[in-house]
Structures are given as C-alpha cells and as structure tokens.
View 1: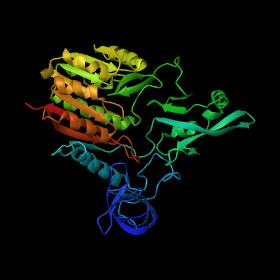
View 2: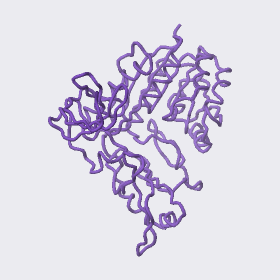
View 3: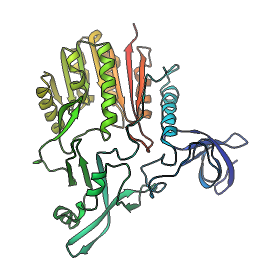
View 4: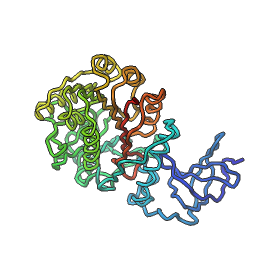
Length: 411
C-alpha cells in the first residue's frame, strides 16, 4: 500500500483527461502524476493517497518519453493554466482525441463511440488567444506617474498569484498591452479602489485592441468579428471563442453536418450572439434563439438582420424556455443546437429534449466530462444515438478542447 512521502520509479502509460500522466506500480496501484509524458520513466514521490488511486509528483525524469519537449513558458508547472507545454503539440493533440472517446465511453455510458469524423488541431499552438483576463493581487504601490497594482495568473494551489508580464498563448498585441494598461489613467483609478478589479484584454480579428477593469463599460461600441467571412458584432464583454481560427473550422463542420440533414426548425439554445443560427440559418425555415445575456441577445438580433435572417429571440435561460419552445415545434422536423457553458446543460434543458424528442441534436462543448455526463442522460433510454463526433482543439497547451456530437433520433 502506497504512503505519502514514499518515492518509487514509475513508467507512464497514458495521459488522463485533465493532463495527468497515468502509471501503475508493480502491485497494480494507479498513480496520477502531473506534467508527465507517456513513456517517461520517473522517480516520483507520493503526495496523496486515496482508496482507488494515489497522486505523485515528479522528482526526477530518469528517462524521457518520446513526446517530451522543453516548455516555452518560464511559468509552466507553476501557472494554473497550461498542462501540456512539456509535450510536442502532435503528442498533445493525439492524447486529446483519445481522451474524448474514452470519456464518452466511460462517463457517457456509450458502448460504441464512432471514430472521430473530424480531428482538427489548432492552426497555432501558441499565440492564438484573443482574450486575456488577469487578477490584481498584493498591495498597490506608488510610481512617479501614480498608483499601480500587480496583475497575474493563479498558481496551481488556486490561492497564490504571480505577476504576469506575458503569456505565450496570447496574441502578441495583447502581450504588448498587458504591462501598459495598469499604468494608464484607468489603471491608476482601479489601483486606488478599495478592492481592485480584474483586467481584461481583448483583440479582434482586425487587430483592434481593447481593455477594461471589472465589468466592460456599456458605452463602448460592439466589436466587429468575422464568421464564415462575414461580419458579426459582439459586445466587448460578450462571449466569442478565444481561438478564432479553430472556431471557424468548428462552425463550418456543424454547418456541413446540418446541411447534410437539415430540418425545418432550428432551435439555438445558449445562443450568445447567434453564431450557430447565422451559420445554419439558411438551411432552416424557422429559427429560434434562447439567450440569458441581454447584451448578447441584442447583438444576435442585429446580426440576424445584417445576414438577412429572421428569427425569434427569447431572453432568458435555456432551462426555463426550451420546454415551451419544443412544445410548439414539430419534433420530427426540429434540430436543437446546444452550446452550453463549461458546466454543461441544466437538468431542465435535458428533460425538455428527452420529453419532446427533436429529430437531432448538435451538442458543442468545451468540457468533455460534462458533455459525456449530459449524453448519458440524452441517450439513456435508447432514444438517441451518436451519429458523428468531432474534436477541434481551441485550447492548445491546456487540458481543454472543443468537441461536437451529432445525435439523431432512433427510428
């Protein structure tokens, strides 16, 4: 039996969802080791023990695995964000594809999961993010030009912060802006607050940069982004994918899948600024959008008008409105698009689908574990089956990725 403080040699055989290496002792005990690579032979120290597994930390890499490489960031291993900078990107991406299918089988209860119909790596594994958010920490200090407070990322302990001068995942213009924003007039005002607010940096695909402290000001014009080579307006603090190049690939994938099996009704739940309605709308006759953020819904209405699409925009939570929307929709001629937050769909949204049984569901997810959980509910009674699965890596070097599943109603 393993004990805390025990040191032992381990060989890593797999990478679990979340990024930890998986190894087994000679007795078959499972040990999870962060920042390990498949094939690594390690000297590890046990730091936690549980009934069915233990956690270890690397004390020495005795023999590196074939995918191991040097991290690009000096904060790697300390920062709470990245998990895979010690791997080549090819190794990381292959691991994520394996993790998605394994999660759908293990957590999702899917006996047979199709091979991934789409496996798209990010166009860039560094310098892709169009948005950064950093938190203030420590006491303010005075400079010749006014008060300043430090901003940074949270460490692995989820309590300590470190000053961030640049993030290799961010687009270069954001890294140039990062040290300047705290020293502006707005930054000094923020430093003088009783409680300083977070700093958010944003860049559009045309290169326009913006920043704000705390909540975005309401009088700032909407940002202009592009989707399928057409303009889309997005509120400054509105949701827009952080990796535009990869997001475009995902949207085109969903568009192609829907175009191959269109339905008369399209219900876009968690609609945001209308991304999927804009992409799929020309193939449907009736468009319904549900969105709880009023600023995003207002932008969605504008975007629909600019794209010459007519849709009904419903303000409020999907969990509240989806049941009544589907109550009026022709189930055998309706598609529901689910693009929920990382926490996944609420039970009421899943219940609305299992009760009304729309013809097909596209589920887009940035968290494969909650995706698997929700698919287990939707497919529990055999009503739905997985038609296609795809993975597009929006978040290189982190443990996250974007996935999409097409569910179709069993006849």
